[in-house]
Length: 425
Ligand SMILES: Cc1cc2nc3c(=O)[nH]c(=O)nc-3n(C[C@H](O)[C@H](O)[C@H](O)COP(=O)(O)OP(=O)(O)OC[C@H]3O[C@@H](n4cnc5c(N)ncnc54)[C@H](O)[C@@H]3O)c2cc1C
Image (tube, rainbow, N blue to C red):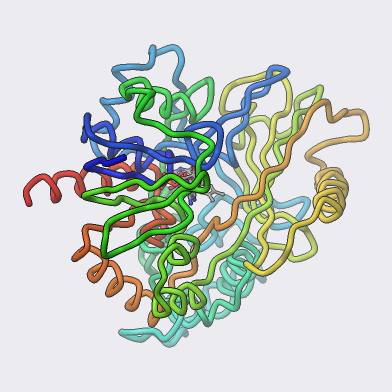
């Protein structure tokens, strides 16, 4: 078999690429469905994604692409209501750094004092050093450090100062002080769109434009012959390609080549894993307006929880729960059972659920990788490797293919830009 574009993975990145290519492409997907991480479970009246997958469009082009195709009453637009569960009796608006005035007086003074006495630098050696340098000791130690340690499941000194890019809500002293009187959310996603039938709605729009015979499901690419431009599937088929566009996780993709240098880069790549629980209850919680919440306390197993029912105005509590792990932990069935039990106990302790509420349905999903760790030296090697691979018409895109921190829309933009670049060759 011979194709112009061989696309590894049928997530949002390569479905977008195929929409631009229109013909002479083949998508090879190891799962039995398209969508990758952007999939939805709908059952028993609950709508669950792989943890909340919300659209914060920054381009009119992609926003229009979707809004034109989905009936207006099928989409909700929400001004985000997000909180930090600082302790059982204290919810603070997110981001923490601009809402320190909501803390108890003594803690507020500590944060302000440290904010004015921090040692700022032009350049920081790590993400942790950047947090101390920009926000001071108290803001860092009360929220930014414990929360991000739970999320990334790594020593924050190993991460690059810019590891979260535009997703990190930076704020200077003036913004922090001004926010005390005139609250203004400075994070990247002040409002968001969510389809009533989940994020997969958007995948269906991309999928509907494609020809089914150009999508090979339940098939995995297991090796790539770089020089002869041939990829082999787990069924033993050889596919000749002119261009290869990968969206599978880079750590797995590099293993497909018979090349020691690429294998050793693979060993350097670090990331976290996230165990997601989607939980459906028989009643509403007393928290009825929050969309999602951040939990910095290390005594609690989860770092973030979300409320689908509050987003979709549903009458039963429907939640996602996110728990971070390092890349080496094997998340066994026993571990999942243990974490589910702990989660329900913690939700009760935090008075998000009560004894009278029944869990009527649930599922668990392991996202691995979930957040890639951007580390200065490795990131440089990754970019150099992409340069070299492009000489052989091999490209790697998407959050995991390009090994970056990005949104679904960013993945679509990468796909579009790559198609335009290749077309101009
Ligand atoms: C916890 C969490 C929450 C998130 N929330 C949001 C959000 O609210 N908003 C947002 O915009 N983004 C969010 N994201 C990011 C979003 O999930 C990704 O940016 C996006 O889904 C990546 O799409 P992709 O197509 O690049 O990769 P993927 O969706 O990972 O698709 C890659 C595909 O490749 C397939 N594959 C892998 N190996 C092979 C192989 N060897 N052969 C064949 N197929 C293979 C996989 O099965 C998969 O289908 C979130 C991510 C996480 C982890």
